[in-house]
Length: 215
Image (tube, rainbow, N blue to C red; front, side, top):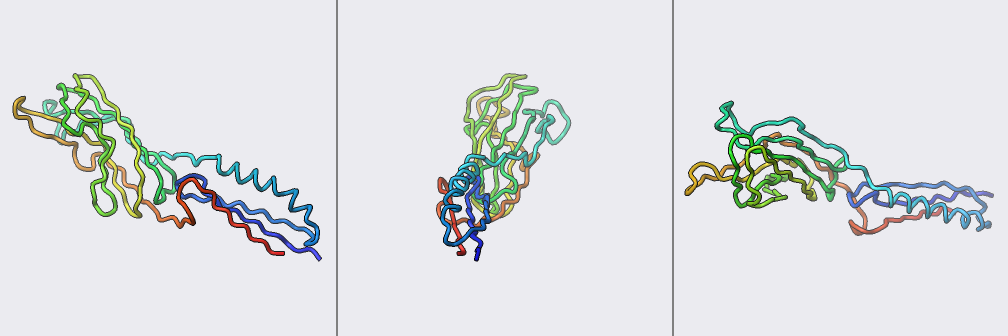
């Protein structure tokens, strides 16, 4: 009498928590151990291949055009121009995944003196907590026509809606007593929903392997 052996292996395709399920159904005589032994290298090869293949980062949202930060159309009020804003990461986005944000800011009318935070990625997590990152600091000072680019990554560690947008901290007005100015709140913001992923064992650097044998 022949019975069916089911071997199921679960591994995370990346540290993002997206699981890859490899299932091999085998038919063999319960007293014949040669067949499953022959298939063991095949199973291992499939597992290793699944581990080595990283999940491709998807473009979650973007703004490719240019946009001055001013709320009106008077040139004398323009400071920095935004372009090439992109947010990438796994799709669907799970708790523990990494999100990468990049954008470029260009001085268009007057030289720009950055404040302490410089250019950075502004973030609000699902609880409304400020999780900003990627600060460039006070240097460099931008002359008219010069640009600064930001690219930084962070881990989304909560379920719910995250908000990402490009931001900056600059000094404007009087040279001796300048005023702090930041980008408008949620300037071309990207709204991302992060889902909860059930995981077994360690989150990073482990192989999750479950073998079910029905003999």
